[in-house]
Length: 339
Image 1 (cartoon, rainbow, N blue to C red):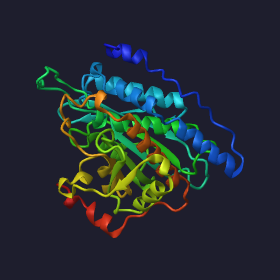
Image 2: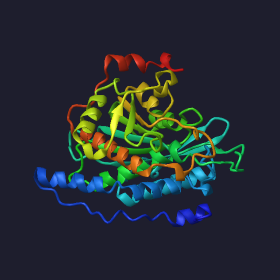
Image 3: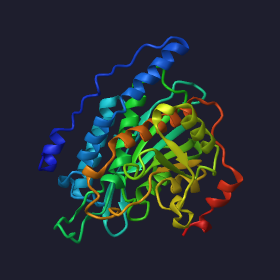
Image 4: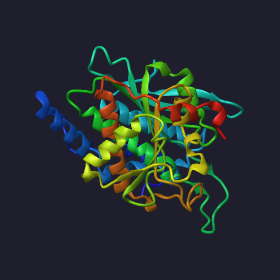
């Protein structure tokens, strides 16, 4: 067991599953390339990444904190290793100011698109890498709020998806942004900073796929919050029905009174006009508790949801027609509806 954050950093070089991109000539080779990419999203790699991010030595990744900075450096190093381009002029890390607390990081990498007409439009994957830091100890004496599910699970999925996209040949027509934000637990601060002050205007973003808490509860179910708010919902239903190997069913929000659409980072994209969907598996007894530990995570479920999210982003990134809001969605994302 690794016992210090520096030791975790020393172990950040993680093998890319021995998978190499293949040359693509025509539909058959393109299909093979997609399968190669999907194979890079595996259970072992997903669990490894969750263990790194939610390790005790990260101190619960409060915004701001040393553990959060270490997490951001880890993610940036992985994005660089995959061959992504830095999203910011100074590199992969965007530093924003948090009122009365200090500065905090977001991490963003870009896979440039291959089509001259579409490469300046973007599909954005997002997850929040922060959690609650340390706090009151539980009955066992544990005071570190590891946030393995909330949201090391979603963050690990975005990293795995980024690696998978880096293996595609040819690349998708549109560009892809892989974003991990901080400050979610304090009020969606990092995603707000990225949408308002990031390198890409909201007008250039065609979709946001946000991933938060996907590692617990029913192994065969993922909730798609906002599934009826844009035609992203139609796309995800089609992908699930056509890919039984995912072992997933996708359902609409079963907890409408909880107002989850307003409670994670996709909401800042949605209010800026970007069609968004939130992949989620629900809360549990360990939510915002020190007991949200890696040992309780269903890493196979995380990997399967990541493969679903990969297919969804690929569908959007290769379609000349971008997602569109439904009337219900346009009504729901008005700021006055936020609780």
